[in-house]
Each structure stands twice: as structure tokens, then as C-alpha cells.
Length: 220
Image (cartoon, helix red, strand yellow):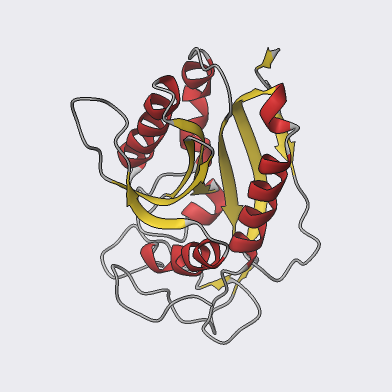
């Protein structure tokens, strides 16, 4: 039986010195998938990949410089944050920046990471763009599930609290929340569709800003 989950699933992180996995909002799941070994494996690997993100370089923590990103040259960048996450999943055997055709008449852009489960794909996107980019990522994953190309999709976004210290207008969990009923109304048949919110461990004026754009060292 297909079940829509109408609640937030909260997951505590035992180690509080890493980028924190704050919550998972399941917009859709089927009983057969959420109870499967495949989902347990995927969920566990996603948690480990999120925990692998640390800042500053060489640290065992994830701290942000406490400055708003609303003005040019201020705040913390977002693109470098996902590098350790992507690399960790790649080490687990995920495909990185794979192009997947989800409709017959259009070849869509790359997805950040993907894993083939039998004949379908499970994909994960880490948001580094604005709120419009977040909606495009969700729409792409939803369409892939409706066409039975994707078995599942997860979007990773910062919380509103973390957003305050990042590049202005980056997509975030709370800004997407009013649209959850729309995505939950879609007629998926199988798999899992959801959003993970992540958050920094703390703030420190002794921490360098995370570079904006693609500059700077990877977060490991």
C-alpha cells in the first residue's frame, strides 16, 4: 500500500561537531521502499556524506563566519560546501554528475549524484542556487518519478538559520515548506521523494569565510 507521510522525521546526530542533518521531510514514500534494505543503505550513506562536510579546512567541526551574505563579498559561499558530500557518495559507488534522460523528447542536465537500483535511478541534489533552482530540482526529480525513470529523489538544502550566513537568496527548507502540499499531491507509484535540511554546528569570528563561487579548498 502506498503511504504519504504527513509529518517531519527528525534524526538526531550523535556527534554535534559536524554539519548537522537536522530533519527529513518525506513528501512521498511507498511502504515497500521505505522498509527496504536499499533505503536503509541510501539513508545511512547520506548521513555519513553530510557528516563528512567540515569547515575550516583541517578541522573536525563545521563552523560558519557570523556574517550575513546579503551584500556583495560578505557571508559564506555555498558551492564549496557540497564537495565533500559529493566525494563521499562517490566513494560509496554513486555516480557523480550523471546525465539521465527522463522524458522521450528532452535530455535533462546532470544530477549531482545518482545510484542505479535495478532498472531505476535514485538521485540526490545538493542546492547551491536560489529558491527557483530548488523548485527546478524538485520538479525534475518529481517528473523522473512520474515517468518511472527515478525510483526516488532527495534535495539537500540549508535551514533558514544556516541560510542567514550564506549567499543571499539560496534555497532553504523553510522557504520551500509552503509548497509541500503540491508535491505531496502528485501520483507517484513507488519509491521515496523528500527533502533533507542541514545546518552548521556553530558560529565563530575566528573561522574564515567559505569562499564564494568555485574558489577555495574543498571541505573535508
